[in-house]
Amino acid sequence: MSVAAQASWTVTNLHPSGPTESIARGSSGSLQAGYVTINSQVHASIWNGTAASWVDLNPAGSSGSYATAASGMVQVGYALVNAAYRASVWTGTAASWVDMNPAGSTNSYAFALSGSQQAGYAVVGGIFRASLWSGSAASWIDLNPAGSTRSIAYGASGSQQVGYAEVDGVARASLWSGTAGSWVDISPAGTTGSYLYATTGSQQTGMARVGGVFHAGLWSGTAGSWVDLNPAGATDSRAQAMSGSQQVGFATFGGVSRAGLWSGTSASWVDLSAVLPSGFTHSYAQSISSDGIYNYVSGYAFSTATFSYQAILWKQPVPRHDISTDLYLGDTVNSFALARTISYIVKQGTTTVQSGFVSPQTSSTPITITVGSNLSGSASLILDGSSFLRRVVNFSAAGGATNLGTVLMANGDADDSGEVDAADIDAVIADFGSSSVTSTDVDVSGEVDAADIDIVIGNFGATDEV
Ligand SMILES: [Ca+2]
Ligand SMILES: [Ca+2]
Ligand SMILES: [Ca+2]
View (spheres, rainbow, N blue to C red):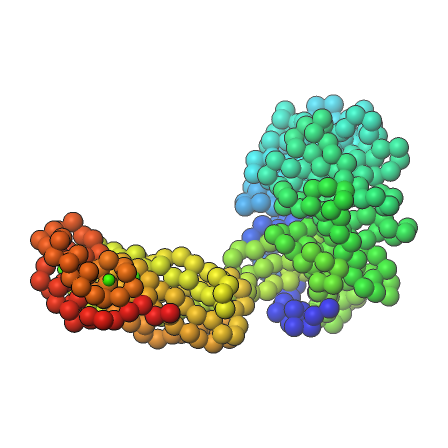
C-alpha cells in the first residue's frame, strides 16, 4: 500500500452533537447521505461536509428512516411508517419525503438512484424482488428474474441496475437494464455467491465468495471480466461503491475492518483507516464522489470513546496542475476587433497531456490551463494559431502549479506556413482593404491595411518553434 497515496487524504468527523450514532452511506459531490440514531430512533440524514451541516430527514410519522444514496439534491432510502418500511425519496428536507412503497408490497427499500430512477427491492408475495422506480409508488417495476427466489438491486447508473439474484440457493452477481427479462448473471466462475453494489454503467463492483470468504471484486460487464481486488494480507474484503476508475469499501486485516480505496487492482489498495485520528477501530468506506475540487469518500468508523459508529468523511484535493501564463500576442492592437483563437497542447515527451484553445480579445491575456493530474517533470506548452508563429515553452512541472510568466507569440505568418515570408505579404495584399476579419488582418485592427504589411516585413524570416 502507498503511504504517499494515504497522505493526500484528510479526515472530517461528521458525527453531529446530539445523536448517539451516525452512519454515512451515500454521497453526491460534496453532499453525504446516511442516518443517525437520536433518542433511540434512526433518522435519515444528510450532511454537506461537516458535522454542523447535519440535516434530519426523518419524515413526520416515521419511527425510523434511512438514507442510502444521493444524486444531486435527491436522496433515496426507506422509512418505517405504519409498521412497514417504505422505499423513499427526499429532496433535502424531511417535508419533501415521498413514499414509493408499491401496492401489494409489505416492505420496500431503495438503495440507489440514477437520473430520475431509483433501485432497491420490494417484498411482494413474501419474495424479495429487485425493483426499479421513477419517483412514485405507481412507477414500480419488478426486476425479479424468472426462477429467482430472492433479488435485490443495490446500484444504478444510466440505464443499468446491479445487485444479486438468488438462483438454486446461490446469490449471483446480476445486471439489469430496466426489466426482469433483461437480467444477466455475471457471477464469476469458481465463486460461490456474488453480489454487486455499484456500477458506472460499464464497470461494476461488489464481492464474490472465494474459498469460503468474500473478496472485493471488479467486473466489466461479464463473468469472465472479474478482477479479484482482495488486498494482500486481507482475510476478506468488500467493495461498496465506485466512481470512474476507483472503488471503495473495506478489508479485514488481523480481525480489524479497514476502510480503503482501490484503482482497479488488488495492489492499488490504499488503507484509508491509516489517516483516522486515534480512538477509532473498525472503519468502512461506503461511497465515493467528487465536486471537481475534492474527491470525497464517506463511511463510518467505530469510536472507542462513544462505543458507537460515527460518520466519517475522507477528503483529497483533486489532483491537478495549473499552468498559468500572460499570453502576449506580438504586434497587435490593444483591444481586438474580434477574438483570435489560439490552440494549446501540453505534452510530456510525445504524449499529449491536455489540449484545447483560448480566445484572447486583447494583446495581453492571462490564461490558466488546468491539467487533471499531478503533472511532474519535463513538459512543454505548445501554442499556435491565426497569424502567430508556434511557440514551444519547455518547463519543469512540480508542486501543482507552474507560472510561465509572459509568453510572446510572434506575428506575421498570415498563411500559417510556419515562416514569415513573401507569401504572407502576397496574402495581405490580396485581402487589402477588407474589414471581414481574417488572419491577414495580422494586428487584429478590424481592417487589412498597410500596418499589416509593415508587421509582416518587420518579422520577415521568423519561423515556428519546434
Ligand atoms: Ca501559426
Ligand atoms: Ca507564411
Ligand atoms: Ca490591420
